Image 1 (cartoon, helix red, strand yellow):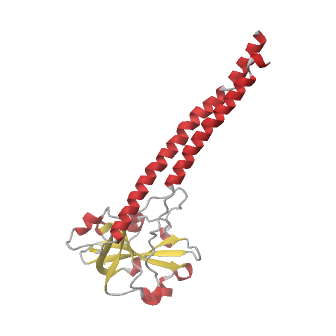
Image 2: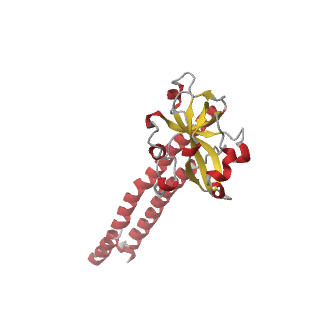
Image 3: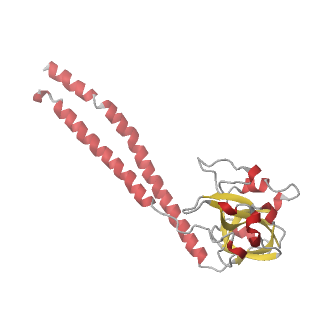
Length: 255
């Protein structure tokens, strides 16, 4: 009997590390599921904001003069703004394409109200990276731009630092674009957001090609949440089956 109890104790000790692993992994899996539900709520709210904004006509960015301050947090809100482009100060943001990689052309616009607004005028393929190859699209004089407000982005884990010496940026880095402007530009005049220009009217020569804002935002967070919760349930089931088998096999009456 003593030998049987010893064997059973040995089998039970074999449950300790599986139990520790299960107890450690379970909160992580559940936490990831809850996080995905939070992301789901955020994404649904974002999509609702986009749909609401797209159904409205463009609002003037500077009429009244301080109107832009009410629009800072209104991402994807259609706006219109009038000014003159500083083509000599355009900044290029790398844009991997499905068929051809290229660049988004961010050009400072000196607005009627005395501000500077970085406008994403659209996509150009890598072969047209040099402004001289698309000079027809460098509109001179006063223009009115219609487009969508976009917030500056945050640096991703794997995004390289901007190469300002070669005019290459890798995320919507407003701070770096602003800092790279010529010394005679008053950086305090730069508005704290971007505007993505609409596809129409098209630029002369067809480049840059506007309307690059991605509006088909994927929303699979519910699927991801169910996956994490499912893994948590599976982990519990596997441990229960393992533990019952372990205890049964260690029962002295079966020895």
